[in-house]
Length: 558
Image (cartoon, rainbow, N blue to C red):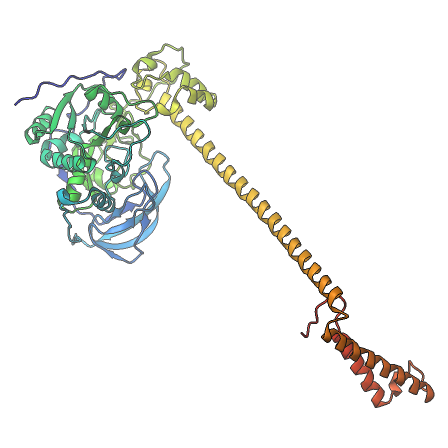
């Protein structure tokens, strides 16, 4: 029975862009040849970077874990081929900051030997055990956010005010210009993509799967509909940017609006990219960890297309596989032209987040005009898909009044670039919003560090005062006990009486010795002429006197 067309909803704002899809979507996915060296960063996902499990000189196999997940928001990293680890050091990575990050450098041995695959019997596995295996397989979101997938696949306890997850949405919109990796994936491997979606539905406990694909991908729509089952609905959605955003696609397909500051799971919906579903299929059904992904190489290159590149492939090798850059190329963009960033170093490797590399030229990407003052026309607010007021956020971000910028819901901005695109003054609005967010995050980190330092100082002061008080109490108790013992024990204590008698006898003998000295005419200070018996008596007196404790003092010889 044929389904009735689903009613679609239109989100606020958005823009229509020149697609530039035909440059790279006409040819099948091409596998990259085996390279001599791979650079595998340990930070390829949101959260804590993986912890290196290998050392320089170690031999590794394709699919072997070389970085273990560290902490909850983390996932594993694997070797893309067999070979030897030659370095673990900071290397260039594809990131807007241009900073280096720790990476494992592997020299390939050319044999491409792999660890034994371990397919999983997922229909009969406990979802929790299955999630742990997915974490070990290194799966992260391949739509750009690279959030560890095993966390999103945990229905868990819903947040306060949210219901249980009831719908899985597979995002095949791919709304940014130039990017076609998801389009070719859906055309060529639709069955595997939908099988991955079924595994996701099993883990989330949902019975409805919606796959949203833009109308400008008719071949992908046809392939998915042919592979779909009764619980999977393939929906053609309008080609309007940013219709592929998670919140926008959710609203388009269901009419449900995700609350400001919330997640789609707050309304019982979970969203995954089609590339993530395909990666999950390979991890679960074929037992292969995430060691490669499909990357669009387009723009000013000889052979634009989509390439299946291993994680760690240097971007200059990827460009060489596409025939190299043509004359006049003046840089590269990682990602799309709306939300991507300038590549700082071609030695940077392909990571799980790299879905597209666009080679620029002055014709394809002419220089941006000089920014003019904002005259508050409101075009940016009309184009904003989140219904914000970018001109107000821009003013407060520029003047560093970050509190006011936050009051205008700065952190609801998805940085899609629609406002910058329509601005008649050519103001790079998104750049100001990114700057404001980074400054707020930095101040928050500084405040947290100051709070921690203050807490440590207060605890140290408290600990020193407590120790000082305990020591004073201890000394006071000891002194009181000694004083009480001396006062009560001197006259009655047999030992004390015995010692006192010995001392008195010694003093009496000393007095008698002095009398004998006087009778013999020996001066008291002429000690050199003392008789031996007198010297012995004086020595015994001094020794015993040293052993007799003072009142309130314990005998050290007891």
